Image (cartoon, rainbow over the protein chains, first blue to last red):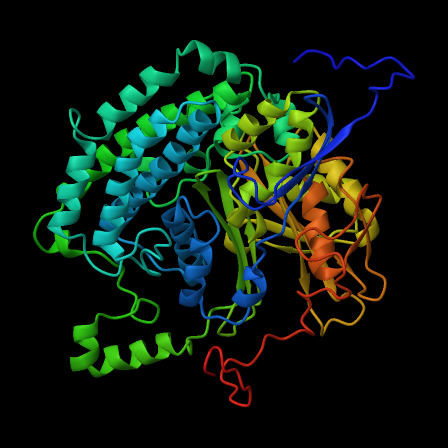
Length: 409
Length: 167
């Protein structure tokens, strides 16, 4: 990025323009404001304002039983709700000491990696849109639709999924769900072929490279100091991935690579996300193979044996006294949570999504804090765009994958 | 050699004898409490020490304990050593009538907004913060909403006449 040229002293043109980028600007892809101080098209200063859709999740969570907090987590990073849901379930399970069967872990991995793909494909195709290439966005959208159909088969909803329960899933995966998964994974007609085509369109595209290389870069040291995690940190060259460093949900059973970049600019972020999608596809295939190895009664396992916390099936509620009692206790939120404090994190679409839960032994959390990766790294935006062009700021913003819902909680 | 909780504890007690208290290990994460004047010294030591190397601030938030007179607010730091992949948690407690805690922004850029958020919801006054203003709530708000003296509305209340939502 070239040094900013200052106009001569006393020049009549020596005046700056203040531009409000947001809160409702089509290029910000979310509700947040940037007050830009512009000299021509160069950004001298940027001030970020967030909080337009703050919904007090942490306060609300203080009077809700654990299972009612899951829908709140949906609404943080709504491009990959299942990742948030699973992160929350895993936190609760850690606190409650629930042991999860392997098959459930693998099914969760499938869902989480699908969610990661749906998150990254949105981010990367939006970078394409912001550089003027709308086509890629439309290419990949049909596969997000397919991912949403898989969610729908499992939990019934599509965007804000509330998928799974504490202890497992609400129902076993149907054969249709696996059929759709196979359709998604198909090498010729499925997502791999489409992703290849998407990459062909962008990766060596002259216009795209010129627009993104050297745009909004950040070094590894600064990125760590700014609390970057996830693809944005990896693009800066730090191979930190929660899935590898603190494996959860049996991620230690899978072979995959953590892609890293070097310069931390928009192009590297794009490449890292693309490669992560390939890795996710490979993880899903491995997980699907592992799931298929379960035969007979084992293939019917879709939740942990933890009656006090896992909501029983409806048919049992109608016929069994115990199930009825537990159903009532769970639904009415009358189950006491053991006292303790726990921090648990998952690798969400944007980085380390942490849950810090303090329980005093009551029925609701005493304090719940969400570590939202987006909120933490967005502070670096002011530094990233300073001295650059306005059009670069737009690309930087979309390649950071800023989700207003996650920022504001 | 992997960095263990015992080593960390030993290093810290060597450096700060009789200062750090309340050592715990809930779910494997080393947790301790420091007096609030010591928070920056501890953070700096954890950052600089060649063995400990806690150089990533994962999270920073506050907790309100209205029953603990004189130390109602706790500020909780989650730190991560990315070299050895160890996490620790450390807390400082402060009086709610004078909630002054030193800011960690000089050490971690990421602390900037996290401290603003903590101020916004709990009113912790971070001394030395470059721009301590509200971040998620409206600027005009004159209370700190996450404190326990603001309970949420009773969900079962029936006295409220709300035609729009039929309650």
